[in-house]
Length: 95
Image (tube, rainbow, N blue to C red; front, side):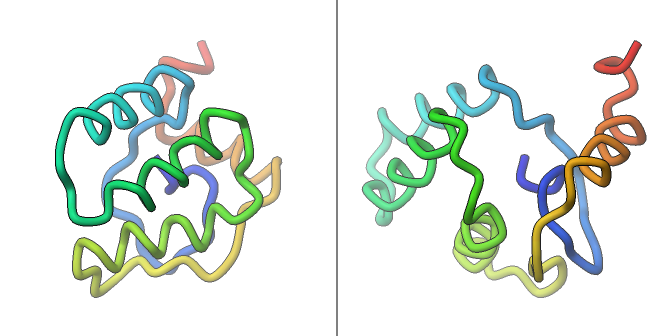
């Protein structure tokens, strides 16, 4: 989900960061016993409240948990760049 909001050299996959998708991830984390459950829920709570101020750091937290090798975020996209990403990756959302 974070790919639509972060600047990275390479991005693999794209899931729209919508209220519903954020809630789905929140629900999965809530009912499971992940090692970092509290940290994950804190990040997801921010997103549920529309707070994406540290989205690049949030992305990199998830990225590091998944042993990321490519795609580390190095900043945030501007609103115009995010709109372009959405247009290019989620055509059904812009029709």
